[in-house]
Length: 99
Ligand SMILES: [Zn+2]
Image 1 (cartoon, rainbow, N blue to C red):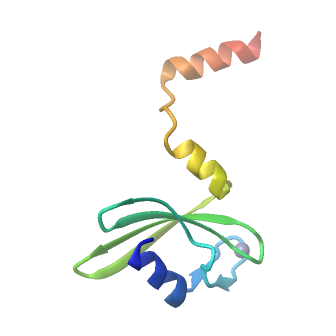
Image 2: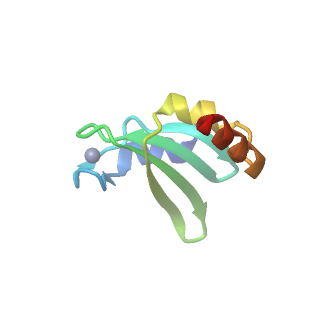
C-alpha cells in the first residue's frame, strides 16, 4: 500500500459534493498506481456517493482531483482493464436495440 494513500487516510478530509458533508476517507481504496500518481476510490459514509480520486505528488505537494461516479469499487476494478468502446461497437449496439 502506498505511503501517500495511508497518509491521506489519516490526515485528509474529503468534501462530498453530493450531500455537502465532509468525511475522513477511511475507505479509500487503491485502484491503480503509477509512480507518484494514484487512482483511488472512496465513498461517502453519509450518502454512499462514490468518488474516484486522482492523487499525484509533485514539487508543490500532493494534489487531489475528484470525480463523482456511480461505480462501486468492484465495478471500478472490473472496468479499469476493459476494452475501449469504438464507433463500430456503438453502432452495433444501436442496431441490436432497435431490432
Ligand atoms: Zn455524501
